Length: 93
Image (cartoon, rainbow, N blue to C red; front, side, top):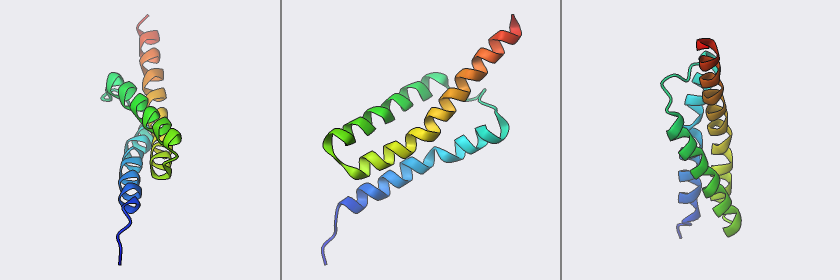
């Protein structure tokens, strides 16, 4: 019996891709992003995008799937965080 190392890639990708969803669900339910660091989410989302593109260029399916799925909640959280910052600034004017 041989072990296919790609299984590790799929498992790692599943873990990292699904890790974003609890935060996204919380943001969807509450709309609260006050405790989320905008800088961190900008850097992380950009990093996920780069990993996705890297996987596309390498034709590495585990990397493409994991980072493609991970981009969805990450972009959503980033969008809501930025939207909430602009809302808060508008209210203080």
